[in-house]
Image 1 (cartoon, protein in one colour):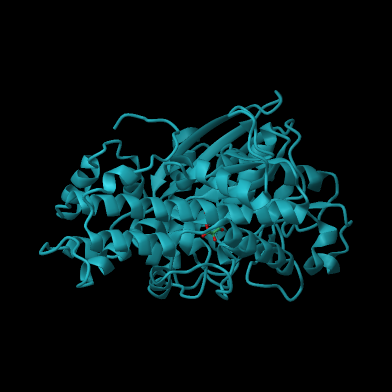
Image 2: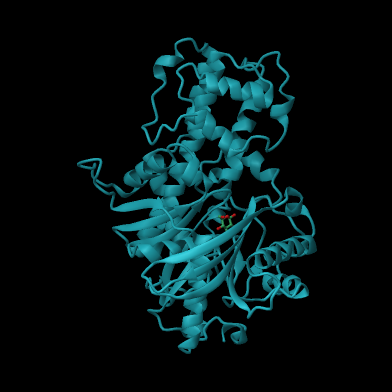
Length: 491
Ligand code: BGC
């Protein structure tokens, strides 16, 4: 397909002329169900601000607000050689990063390994063995088998973890469809280290990192206006820098109140109590059929893992509804398979540049064996727009809430993840929602920046992880041992 670049979502009103009444009614019903108006965005944001604050208290709330022990922004002058390991949902990435003397400059070499799907519901041993194998392969292919001095490693482990120290993290729960026994409730660092030690891989873990914190720090390395790091990908989350004095659950540590502490919000858990989010019956099914029902209410409405599934559930429901004639008389067995459509399928539907939606028609034919009529294609396109728009608008509530909590009137937000980078119109829809929530005056020209801009981030799990490892080594050398479990690894 040709790259169309950013464009305003086109109105398809004119193309609805041949859509029969039953489908038009359904489109209207879906529009009502999936649209989130300005007033609702504002009330969600208000509640979000309170929940962020609550998560920082001793009693806590549903948003974990995990202190990460990353206690400074980079200056741009960090130096050293670091390894970074990123255990993502689809890939495992290993990098070696050299932070050079030049301001905000670095060299990087990296290898990607596929995360086999079976690992996500396999045993803990299989997971750690696989990770250690990849790390060993990387080191051997770049350094041979000669004995090496242990390299400091930042491990990006992007799941909610309680960190009493930066080199420690007790997995609170798996998210993003992972379901591996024997890890929840345990510190993942010794498990990882044991598998690595067995192979004699020369590393010392100096920081366990969340992808959002990595994104925040990597983005702040080149842009001092960066205040929030976000991931809009398979999962969804954000991190920002808090003052220790505003984190009552750390009061017992007696840290100076103005000391910065990066907080991994784990905002995917926002509204697990279902008080404000406009959940549809389809969101309820997604939750019920997931490995962790009741968890990640916000994430399940906006993250890439779930967008295609939401779309699929709606279409199956419409087909099974005798009053709606959609895909009538066709075999929809392929569409009935859970998680058969991912968010890239939805992206392709939204990107179809043709008035007759012929590319969408081909997609349905080729992937699902369904021949869709033109009116059905119109419904399909509208549904994709509704789901994609809702995701973008809701995610802006989280950004607005952090900005409000911190009193940021202007700042940059670094964002990464497949949905942010690849889903059509996600950025523009998110920016529009921020404008509505924060009551900004209309822009005078398209070149004018918004007061709060969500921008594509620097590589968080590579450069970000290296920077966090470097910042931690630096503060330990200066005698700040707060949140360090194994000082011997920082020599
Ligand atoms: C995880 C977060 C992570 C986010 C984005 C969520 O499911 O709980 O730790 O930052 O996905 O990867």
